[in-house]
Length: 561
Image (cartoon, rainbow, N blue to C red; front, side, top):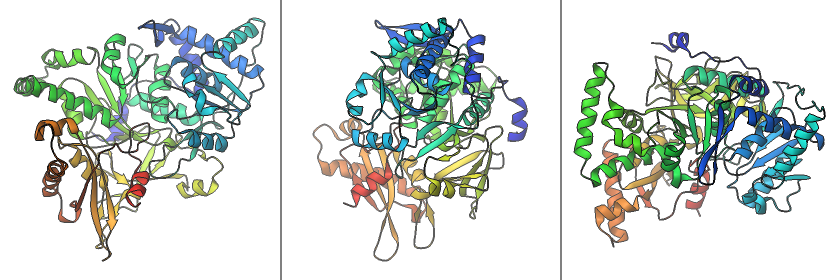
């Protein structure tokens, strides 16, 4: 089936023009349903759409009454109801919302605050020290100040104040300012409009089924465009419920408590989940039985019989018992992990996007997917390959209503990536005969040999990371005196696996050899010019973004010191 034929079978979605339009329609359609599940006294308690709507309207009214109309208002804090409340209140009639990364060092945070020219900030008490003495005129503590603002707003509305309710939204204007994660360079401030988000929501929801019966477990940081659009706004749009995870250690516990059916994740999280299932099976002597179950379920599926949830009941129970869909983003996932989790009866799909595309540009469908592909372009989104090489690989260009307005106060950077109506993504890839987009790597990461051969580090890292002894890896090129380049791999070992393989008390030399042996295995499967020439075994974690992507420019700079 071609992607054009596939588009004839899209899921129906509600037409929306902006985020406020989306919210108000959902408040009517799903009024008495649960919007949020919030931990109170050790248990998840529901907040309905009606209650959420009342809080949004009240907070928005109070913020307008404090002279913040059209102002830049930042939000910083952990995933929590107050974050979702503040974001929606600001963006649906007050001003420009600026989500900030709660994990940033104070110096970097202050730099972003200066770039964004903030007028106000709504913050979690956990981030109070980070913004202390920051030059922001108006500060709101989520725990001590927000309840009073909501009460003031409700009183004002009861007295007839409708300024927030009647506030008009220009869907074309910049109303969202998002900072990129900066894995290859310094972060830039991306300007997005309501239209960008609304089109993205309609497109992604038409391709993958989510319903008012779904419960999403929110794990990834909400300031990031992936979680914000796909793990928050999407659920409000579709009438689903959102439960906030208490931390990575509590994922499986929270899954069971909230009866999660869907979760957004990054590859590292899903790969770790998959590996733990198999390690536990090996440890308990059940690996052979598990493999037999997979063969049986595959045979039954060919007959149109799906017994995976029954055959792998224990695995499902470990993941809460209700999980049906995992969506991977932020980086490419190992296709074997997608297929492996699907063998157990949990659908896994991945998508592709950037902050600049609000964020989704391509997405695998739950009914039409390729595990080695980023997905099909969203309806209304055009993707083409710029200057493809002999293998069809070139820079990915994106066109559509989801593409950003530009970089804030940075016309030079904007002009470099927005040309003739197309966004030049900086990502490399190709489009196959069926219309699926495949990502091969970042343009800035490509290693070019003396003979002009291109090496994509991400490809080699995928192979390396499959080795049990390897927890994570980063591949890059080191220039040689003769003008060629040495493919170099920094490897963070899986130290628990090293204990099993080498025995506790192993030497550094033994660990180095074990890693080099794993690299040698990978090299045997690679073409000669792609083979790793140098291996560096790390003891400490890589520097990462909050979506667990390695900051290559930081790590490579360290290696040159």
